[in-house]
Amino acid sequence: MEKNKEASLQERDKNHIWHPLKQHQLHPNSLPIVKAKGCVLTDDKGNEYIDAIASWYTCMFGHCNDFITSRVSDQMKQLDQVMFSDFTHEPAVKLSEELIKILPDNQNKIFFSENGSTSVEVGIKMALQYHFNIGEKRDTFIAFENGFHGDTFGAMAVSGLSVYNGPFEDFLMDIKRIPTPDGNNTQAILEQLKEIVTNNKVAGFIYEPLVQGAAGMKIHDVIGLGEILKFCKENAILTIADEVMTGFGKTGKHFASDYIETKPDIICLSKALTAGLMPMAITSCTQNIYDAFLSNDISKGMFHCHTYCANPLACTAALASIELLQTAKIQGNIQEIIGSHKVFNERIKNHPKVKSTRQLGVIFALDLNTEMERYGSLRDKLLKFFMDHGVFLRPLGNTIYIQVPYVITKEQLEKVYKTIEEALEIV
Image (cartoon, rainbow, N blue to C red; front, top):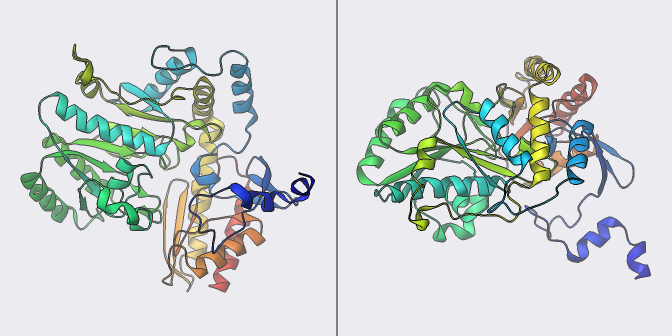
């Protein structure tokens, strides 16, 4: 026992923990983080790191935000947890009301779950059961190439990145994949869709609106996506917008779907929903979809439930984050970050090591002028360089991306930019 107490946190971690997205044979060590505040992570040796990806796009109002934590602390003393299948409570009801105010105006019902993957899983089940309930059994989904929607089986099936799904592909649903629209291929995509619809009973189309996160922050054409959604509507194909990454201000609007005239039937939300403080997810839908589940036949109900869905503490965190999102201060910060990214883009876009750059809202990405594997040696070298220089950036293959918290200071953001510029010298 005494020996274990003397061991470092890093050494104790190795005894029993299996980390996600990690090949322990190649990378046995994990960095102990003991504190987080604002945009800064602090390790067990006192080293500080600017969290330039908001811990996977969750902590958009900074870590341990006092406004959010105080609200959750108060709620913790009143009601911590209650099962949601038979009960309701003020935080969940209030959250549904506040979300409906800012979601696209065709959304009217809120279904709670626990993480991004399960919000997608719920959306898929909604779409399949909707058609089943109205007597039109459909069994096919359409999804974009290179999309990513999560790690549960339904979410894996509609995802298109084999690095995540390889061992499981033989067990997944058959998905028809289409390219993302680039402004020149929309007509070809529509022709492909016509062929798919002719030969398959299509239940739904799932997509990351405008930005494919795990694929390397790839941005696609607004007009083309609108045409795809319009085609789906005309063919009674339910559309599912996976806004787990893009939601809550990251694209410059509350939701990426706000850029597109044709709105989705179903929207998946998580990550910044609770500002990274508590795990929770939501799948919203139209009244029409909800009505298809109303019946005297109990089997036509939505039989999907998580123990912690609509947890009062998570709902309270979400309410606080939505309140912050709509303040003049945060909206002003978002616009300042957008402007700073544009200035940085002018500095870096013609660098010989930079192949291309792109930006949507506070999301900025650059592709290195080199080919490298998603988890290759150069990627590891870059990650180490960033951490050694006090910046947490996590390259996706040959893509370096920034998605900073809305509360980042100008000095912190400039350090992120300069660290990237310095990193280009080692590529």
